[in-house]
Length: 475
Image 1: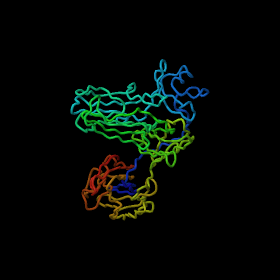
Image 2: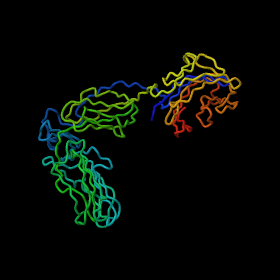
Image 3: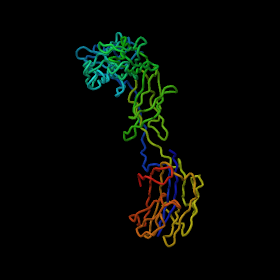
Image 4: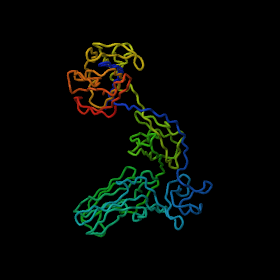
């Protein structure tokens, strides 16, 4: 969208209209801007940890041994009890037999799930199982794909098999030979793990029956994400080896970027350095991943926005992972950006101040009078009309959003409307396209015939390339 605009201060008066008009193509909101004071950030360990004077726990058992009051929740665990190997783990069943679960950050509908598709020998409804945490043996770093403690399932397959849930990372169907309509996903991003090089997925028979399986396996370059398709009659694509994880030694910084009222700002570029950047999603959340141990300055950028703070006011150090690194964004409105026409009338002429040389020529009965600020032009009514003629220009041919703004002062009822007709009801024509009755004609109702100055701002959208139809969304 081109952001064209025209600041105009001109006055039309049909009996007696006095206007100061501002025309903008490429709309700008008429909003007071709230100034937001910078806010300090204190970066600390975002996870619940045992007392810092104790050793570095390598399991949930050690967490409980060091802190008898520890409850179920996220803790910082240290690989091989080394301060250089921290990662987040969820400790479950802390009052009895503590067990470790790896928290999964990405748990949307298409992430960290298994799906068996119906059709063929599978009746009922698709079975989908989503996982939010994975049971992991920290001694071997092997995940148990059959643990459903933190899994939810929907659907029920009947027929060749009776299924209501699936193991982790299984794509299955029983539709036809070489079918691959089942899907699954592994997404370990923003954890400290990737799939060990020893991990392999393979096509096979589903639940005891083998018949022409089909499917694909696609690894991300860092082996943190795997997309699976699979099926057959009956067949699947699933783990052929133990699901062993590799500690990557990398970390992440995450947070949310919103307006001062809490509205998310998507597509903000967030940088932690030349080779470490990401963008916010539709909810305003960002996650900069694969950060090696060190100190970083987090900087958000987006055209027409400023952010508070402009960058993280304290250096962000990892490890551990840094969460809740939030920012507030404010839109910058530059009224000269895209300006196509501006009449100030301060020199008694209709000289265009936008730089586009869309100079107008006052004609007929007009006077130079005092405006709201500076000068304005006052035009006679229907019996002795006055007006300004602006030559045709490509810069004034609107094919997208536009903004038109003006000050006006109507001092009588009888007038000439946009079609040259006498009006007894104060329908004063502000602007019209010569020779085209379907052109843009803006008029004031008689409710504004009060001898006072009023401001009119219209944000519009042109619906066709001809520029003949406009939708007004404010005024």
